[in-house]
Image (tube, rainbow, N blue to C red):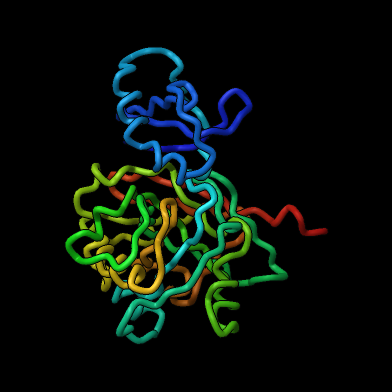
Length: 288
């Protein structure tokens, strides 16, 4: 099952898809009201039952423009330096434990929405294709045996970064949390369709040129490792997001470094989860 969010008849709302051709059914059409991703998760069983029972009935929205499927998470947790080749390309040292930072919910944007660049705030805009994990139920002190049972679904994310401020600030969160710096989508694929999150190809492209091409099998800390580590000290709530790190091929790692400019388009894709496509534009709130 896929959970998306779309503007249908002038009103934004969650939609559900069960077929390969992306036929979207508004949740309102099957009698389910959901304002946040946590609301969707709370009604997941009812959604699956009702959309399946409808079969080929009408009220199917096709060709809709999808927006961000993550709405009002209590937190977005991100992991740095989780692929060995990415560590090498940045000249960093392999961490003994996961490197954790926050991306604030105000950075969220949709799978085809623009990423804003204010060149007075950063001259080193970079991309990072990542697997996003969405929590499905309250989770504290998970174990290796039950961690994946607490995942609702997965999505494609781009951990957009201001590299200059990532180095200048004593921690990462501000440089990773500018408005629009967290595109996620194109939908949430429920965990039952992803039996093993460690066998997924992950890629990115800039203006059609292949930049990253790896697999989640190369993570240093697996999804299970991260869930166990994070839930040891904090409760993870339904709708919370974990970004699991990026493979090699980022702009910072190129020789010479190659950062994003206005007009560039970054596409990120993960096997079985879809593709997000975000163009860089000048921050519309900057006075010229």
